[in-house]
Length: 196
Image 1 (cartoon, rainbow, N blue to C red):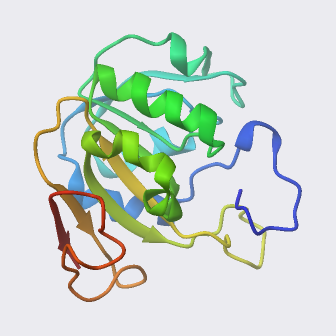
Image 2: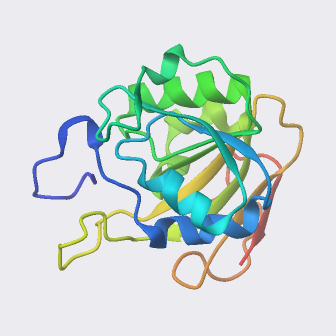
């Protein structure tokens, strides 16, 4: 999962989304909405979303489904326009960037991946699409493991039609304090507002 782990990565970055990773997102999505989960794996993220929200999933798909209820399909071959795309995508940069661009061209897109990404030069081409970052912190990706992941993660909301300033929302385990645009975490991000 992370770049500092000594464990061998799972094929296609298949790590089911733990409930603790979803919880910070819940205050930032409405109760009634339609969505597609295009990197569904075994469907755990959809199950969790439907546990907490009165939402309707149009499609769960994955290039290598881990459950018979998941349709086999490449994320880049999906062109539907639900209210949201919501997924925990592969973190490999080349594919991640293709997913950001493709899905956020179609609809507002919530993606769960490492929090370090926003600090890299490679994030700059996608920052104009970035409406919101919701800090999650470290989570336990492997249920029977004694350890949490070594990388902090965040939910990122991308939208091709974004015209608003980027909002960053911290949590008790993540960001703390008030940041100004001069803070290193925000340099180069243009209009930014932070809530903690």
